[in-house]
Length: 369
Image (tube, rainbow, N blue to C red; front, side, top):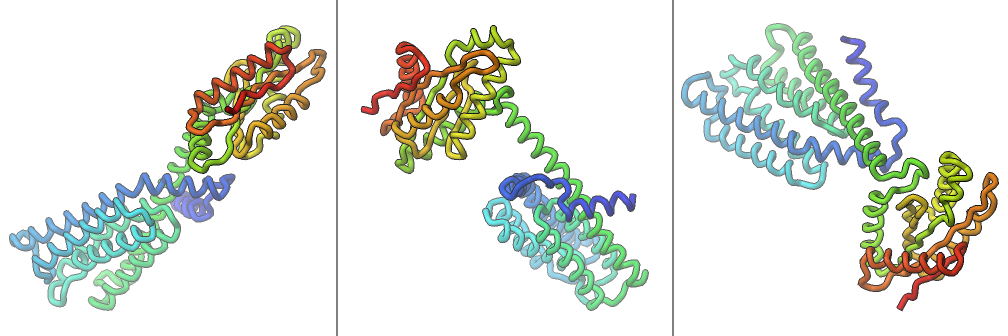
């Protein structure tokens, strides 16, 4: 058990579960965890407010001894904590949420586990009851700075109790062991939660990639392309930048497939996919949208530069490949103001059909006006 705890602590702070992720992926993972844990953190704080209110009712009713604070003040603090919980659920900045979470925890710690002089008979029980809250909250913290802040808050409150009330009857060593155990278990639970979140995030990424990627070429499939292309189309339309669509089709692919077999046909598809991806770069959205039909949406390109792109791809792809001559035809269409992606696609398809009619192995451009 001790070895497992040490491993979890080391793994959490070393971020072993996030190895291989770049900075963008790490931030995406962090934001996903924050979105998932934010309502739970808010819920834990709200539970703390309700618990303080219930304790106050018990004290007023005489069901449990008071720790010296007026009932109205404890109810007011419970309301403040509830307000912090509501704000944590809504505030966009994590720094603001952390400050409010720490403030709410501090208020709960004071009014639940720090009696006024002369009312310290329930100090041990009240302290144990309060410690459940920071333990639960630490398990939900995502950023290391948040964990560190909670650990420091727990230590500071533990030290304040000793200053105010002296060392407990069991001795300060056992008291500090109890405090550090609370922090340790909070870190272990946070590590388990983090590992689970990373695993779930990686699995989701794999499923999304599998659902949107063509397994033969590694390009986007039709579903993935539709989503990415719609986003690129919206960006270009909003920014007023040129946008062009190139649709490509391998000429007589069935003959090539019959001659080379399915593995050879897949190799031809992979070669075209690699050429397109290399030429399209980061600003191009390339996909295999059918059997031997490909498309690439080029942001910042007009009809002329898109045609140049298509000619480069056609030139690199054309030639003899394992005994089979490979050529392709392409249609190019430049986006018109107010034109939908579907309309742009239809004009590019018409240009492709024109290239087929004119003898294949060529690029045709749809009229812009």
